[in-house]
Length: 421
Image (cartoon, rainbow, N blue to C red; front, side):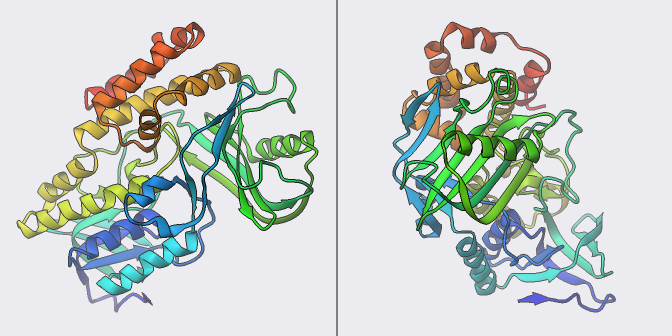
């Protein structure tokens, strides 16, 4: 149930005020409430309205958390195509049931007493023991800690300015086709096949097909640019998808949904010495090398909530509580990993289509725990660096040469993470 703002003269009190209405906000709000904390979710829009985007995830990420029931589909045959060769990844991939995940968090909100207020956050003022947020309605909210989970353009969390932020862009649709656009019953992670394009087209703006069989004759097909600055326009992605389908003599007969996705990939980390704690996109939790985030929310949310609850129980307030929370969310190990991933993405964006496919062809031939851990950001630093060394050893000289020499801001990105700057 969404409560209207109370009379303006009456401040609403809570332990933690969570700002946001998306997956990140719902994830951390419910995780906090399960520690018997008083939580207010301050949402600019209805948090129960349908989400527009598709969320894919490796099956084991949900299985390990006991949340496999949240998958709408699971594919045992998951593959990619690089340099004309199909590679079977040997791991299950799933499509999250957006409605089920939303309802899962909604039930937890009800069960643990999360108070949902639909009132855009306006201003914030900090005091030694608490913070006060004034909603656009004029309502005042007073909390011992504020968590900003309002997305990639956060309301309160501050991060360093970063010119030239790379964006992942995708144009996709759910439809019925004259013939299956991919092998029935399968999932395609990345198909960089470009036979439908002229030779010069994909070299500096490579895109790939991301596709899944949804059953009952319905397929989801999406043309994706992994990362680019400036981002590839949706019109170009749509045009490439149409040409790809035409090349395979696959005509679109009916459209059920259209998806346009655009989000930043390599934002810098927020300042970990600020009073407001971030989560989700506001805390730069998108994986800089893959674009995934939902798995990270589900894995890291409970730990952050536990750290906040412990701090509150010990009587921590103000900056001491915020520092404890930030250190849990972005430990030194995670900060260094983020620097490595940003460095890696910068390298990938400079590769031609052929070199990029060669890189991925080599990457997915690493032992499965290494490439899977890389994509889910679950490898500790020693294992991550070990995976990079093995990749370098296996890669042909054309790729090694590119990896060795830092160009532009690549070295600075790496050092920023490794030196915890």
